[in-house]
Every structure is written in C-alpha cells, then in structure tokens.
Length: 146
Image (tube, rainbow, N blue to C red; front, side):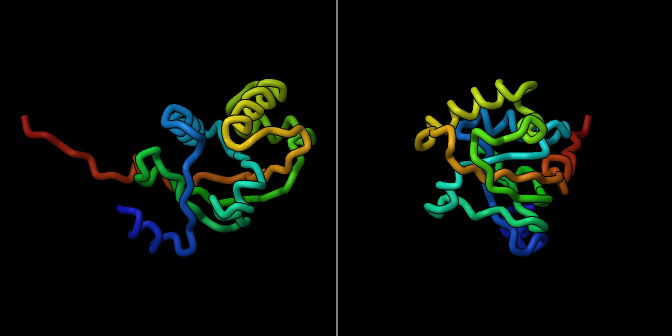
C-alpha cells in the first residue's frame, strides 16, 4: 500500500521518521519490529515549532523509512511531558536503545545537541506506543519461476 491508501486505512494518521539519520532510523525501526522499542521521545520544541504533530493517545500514526516510504503503523498508548532530567529508567529502557538510564541519557544528550541544543531541564514529549502493522510484512511476495 502507498501512503495515501494507508492514510485512508488509518484516518487522522500523522507521519514521522525516527532519528536524524538513515542509520539511526533503520536501527530504531528494527527495534520496534523486534518488540524492544515501545516508547520514544522528542524535544517539546520540535512540536512547538510545528516540525511534527504532537502525539495523541489512541491515534494511529505511520512511521516512515528514511526514504519516506511507509514502514510501520503505531498506536500511541500514552503521552507525557517530562523534563529530560526527570525521565525515569522504566521509560528510558522502554525506548529499547540502551540497557541503562545513563546510556539513554548519554545517547539522547548527543541527539538533542545535534537537533537544536540540550539543557538538562528541557521538556520532552514522552510517548509509549504499540505496533499495529509492519508494512514490510504486508507486501506481497514476489515469486520467481525456476
């Protein structure tokens, strides 16, 4: 299915891309597919500037591959505004990217420094989600004749 068809299947769905590079995007999508990543966060400033649509509990959105093609349908379970310095270990581990709170803090500090600046008390939009559909699995198989 193309993006237009998917937006009909998931009315009101927003689209977004994980990460800030193809490598990170691919890694995060794979973590979701493996069931290791069930949460994500972004600086509140990204939503205030209008770069992204604020997540809404119950809405189903479409995560894109780096090239803009549909990758996954996700349903937002919960959304909380939390200061970076107050992110709890349970949320950090639910992101599936690191095995410790300190690892999560280090990696996310670097990400936020690359994407507009870092402050320990910066506000984050912390979202928990569940995987609804993996479009990689939805594609018809191509069979070749021997």
